[in-house]
Amino acid sequence: MKAEPPKVDAKRVLIVDDEPSIAVSLEYLMEQCGYTVNVARDGIDALRQTEKFKPHLILLDVMLPLKSGFEVCQKIRENRSLPATKIIILSAKGRDIEVAKGRALGADAYITKPFGTKELLEQVRRLLSDA
Image (cartoon, rainbow, N blue to C red; front, top):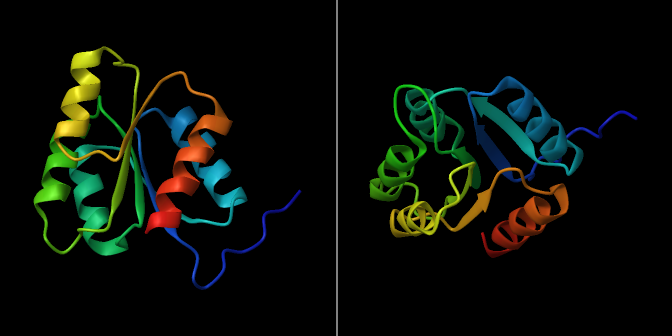
């Protein structure tokens, strides 16, 4: 089944994950839902792409090369030109302290890996409907 091309007004989603299998799976899932998608493989590239691509939503891993997802989240929240960008942290680090840190740094949601597709899509749709 071929995905339909994204609509001109499609929401933009940036996927930030250094694990190729996860990034490809998330990219496919988001494209199937009609979103325009870019992928970054490290924290520096995530910040660069956020400036250029201006995503409505970022799916952000915590454990990344060059800059952690926590650092990326904080930098995005400090950037006054990106106030409406929604951030969902996706991480294997699911202890209360990590979740609290992610939320304190400005993440809109924190989902622990492994996660279900349904749970992720519910969060994405909820956050993008607010955007």
